[in-house]
Image 1 (tube, rainbow, N blue to C red):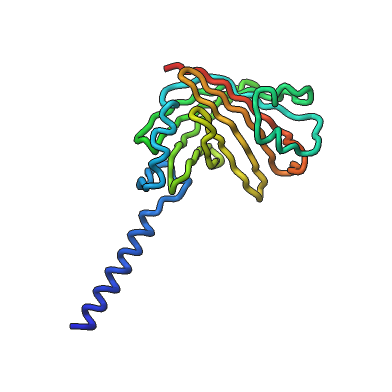
Image 2 (cartoon, rainbow, N blue to C red):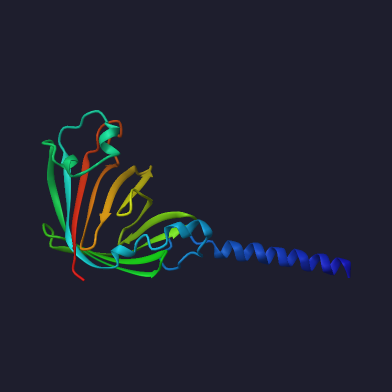
Length: 211
């Protein structure tokens, strides 16, 4: 009886461990909403202002005169950051985004990017979510998965960042959402770029609420 009891305890323990492992949701999972934890509750409705349909343009700039990295500029970017003479617009994407919150912590998004120069339309899906006490933006593109970690910078602004190697993808975006408009200002280093210099690529998104 004692052996049988001990075996039953071991089996229960193994089943509990297995259940915990199965319930752990990967950050790149956009289908399942993670279980809400106490650490998540400070971020309730953090994405709510985005719910609805938005349209606008996403501009891409190339810095033609790379100088030594200036952390003061990179960590406090604004529209003036894009007005430097060395920045040249190299592309513009027509963007439509539709956001819908399933809960105060899990928001779905459908993105349609139209590239006029190629007459090409690309559709992606993703989520903004709170998981393990952190803010995440995950987008599944047709050929890539993009993950940014977020932090609040005032009631209207989220800072989205990623720092990946092999290949190098270092990005910083400042997203400000208001009632009927939102903007994104950012920069990025990619494979082959020298991160000791200012970023080669800069970005500006300007969107208006459609409904």
